[in-house]
Image 1 (cartoon, rainbow, N blue to C red):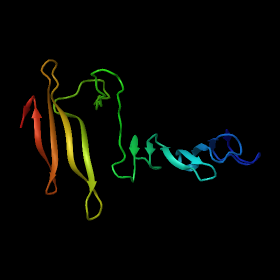
Image 2: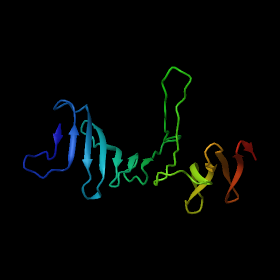
Image 3: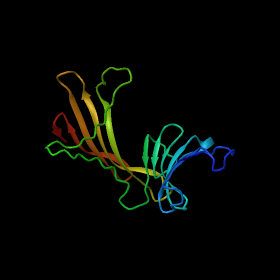
Image 4: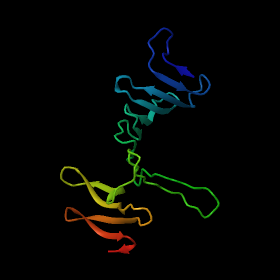
Length: 178
């Protein structure tokens, strides 16, 4: 375990390095690096004498980046590999129950949602061909139509891009498709 400066008496470099036995250059090394005035912490891996590569970053605001050193969301995954990144949620129980994703809207006031509040959405985005501006090509969204206890109604809809406009193409409202 190496903490700080390589030379006694030198300034600390804000690095924690974990590696195998001294002199074994083939072993994997793990570094935690405080990037100083950027406020960012990088988690790096390297083998032997090679420069370590950054695999995860915690930004100054707490955002976590995997594949990026400048995350701009709570969790920001980036990959230049085809069909990646993949977010995998796996359940290994040997029963009929499946893994789940919950999108929960919880008002900060502690009260209930209001009628017609939107509860969650999944957007499918790409870039246009002129200036690489982000475009939402498809959307899956849910809305609470009626939040009254015992008579709750919901709406789920799918929207898709049509001639430059995101249009609702399928609605399911209170159990009816339209």
